[in-house]
Image (cartoon, rainbow, N blue to C red; front, side, top):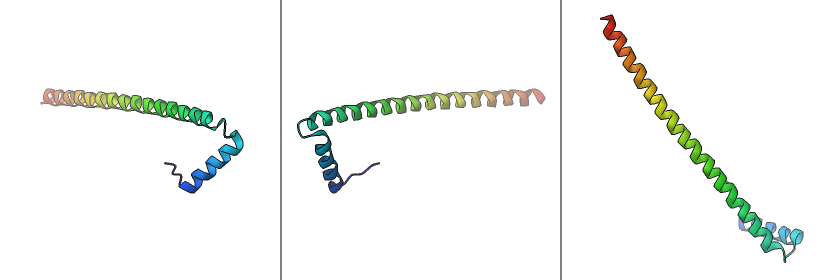
Length: 80
């Protein structure tokens, strides 16, 4: 993940103050925080959905393998 040290953070804040201005900086930071939170929520939601789909797929695969295994046993029993 991205790690920002103290010197980098000071430079970013200084640039933000110069570009945005000290009066609008709190408003802009709140907006960035809100966007960041929404992105994290969307990523976590997508991740949970993918994990759920993988669990369903895994369960289906196990059921299929069990079914195939039972069919093979029946075929062996019939051939005897």
